[in-house]
Figure 1 (cartoon, rainbow, N blue to C red):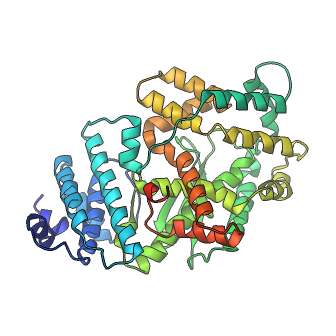
Figure 2 (tube, rainbow, N blue to C red):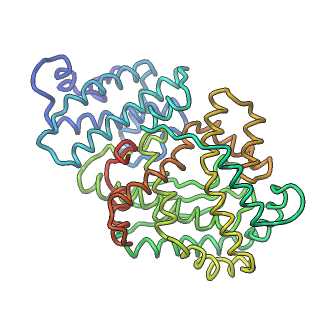
Figure 3 (spheres, helix red, strand yellow):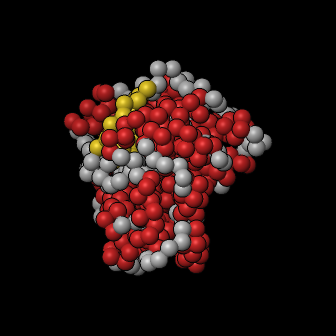
Length: 431
């Protein structure tokens, strides 16, 4: 790489690393931050999909394409940066500046681990998530899941296999294809209105929405910069009424769209912290992003407010009867108690403890889904691996943080939640 010193790791930084003088001055944090962006952009040239969003200088992206370092070179650069970070002096800085240093350290640790994985190095599931997401997920209990299935069985009585019986019961809550647009439009509007009560959204924020097919995921937010997002929803499988709020809040308000817009507004624009203009998918940033997005659903619609909104607004738009809405809501809440099954199946499957067929069977049983849908969930974990912990553990850590840092009022909870959306947080800072 002929531009080694121009593009990555300024000479002053390299000099400081090899000297025994005073710690690197705080101003050098910006040097490391710029180097981090350019490192991520170059890793992105080696792995499609690695960069989830980038809205920094276009010339940096062009430089990464024009002259990409080898994985070996990029790994060495990441090592240099990790050596430099502990020597940054933040003793006279603010809590936010110290959080920034911790964030960069965790993010670059994840970049280094991802480079190693691209070079063929393998980690156990828990080792991988610790390196990439700064967290290790707890294990669930088969006894708990079986007990939950028994509760569900009692809630929806009948004859035959419960999974088949539940699938039949659930059909009445499927959104007709020709109603999807109206239902999702209303749902996102409701999520936005609930968020706006407590959060001052960045000016000119907006999104584009579309339905897609043939994806490993059910929904995705592609952040474009300038407080603008492209939100996509996958229609490969039937979409049930609850997914309108799930995806409207998760991908939109107060989830991914708001999270990215707040980081851009508060950190990139206000503070000039350019490192937040790039988002590597396999990094600690994703645990906060996915965790707050999932938790954002109950922030927008706490308690019974969700069912009220669904039955008064979304059910009529979908042409769905509300006769069994309360029972269905209770069933969905019970299913939420089995959410760590996905993480545990991913761990066992990716660590080679169970076969692919066994993983599909477990997802079908405890996710109460058809085999083709269960296969899609396995396809997701094969693609994104340990990323799955970000939805479950990330949500629980977000919940714990909000409870611990608020007075319990709606205003207090939203203030703590908004702090999560607009500061340099990683999982270890939430525990």
